[in-house]
Amino acid sequence: MTTQANCHCGAVQITMATPPTDLLECNCSLCGRYGAKWAYYTESEITVVADDDALVSYRWGDKVIDFHHCKTCFCLTHYSGTEHAESDRVAVNGRLLTDRALMDALPRRYFDGRDTWKIVDSF
Ligand SMILES: [Zn+2]
Image 1 (spheres, rainbow, N blue to C red):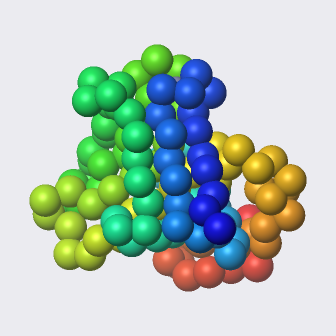
Image 2 (image 1 turned 45 degrees about the vertical axis):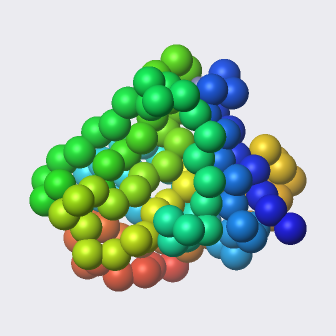
């Protein structure tokens, strides 16, 4: 059973091989501002359908991750590793799941990226 996520305008469509098992919120300086709820996959587990010029990306810090946004509606759609990354991990912004009931029902995890770099009970 695949799961779908898309940006608000529909220019970026992401298909995940399996539904997320949970969504992770991170309070680091970037994720905390974005308010993303991450669903983690490997590159081969997701398919991103978008025109070549549909996405704009932000890279910061140690430059191992590109945060991708729709150039039209500006939704943060997903992140992927750059050429500097040591894994093929990607993350889809669970706030973009087309199945809104699934999004609401998924367990939440909280990663303290601001301070301890550990999973915590809540923020
Ligand atoms: Zn869009």
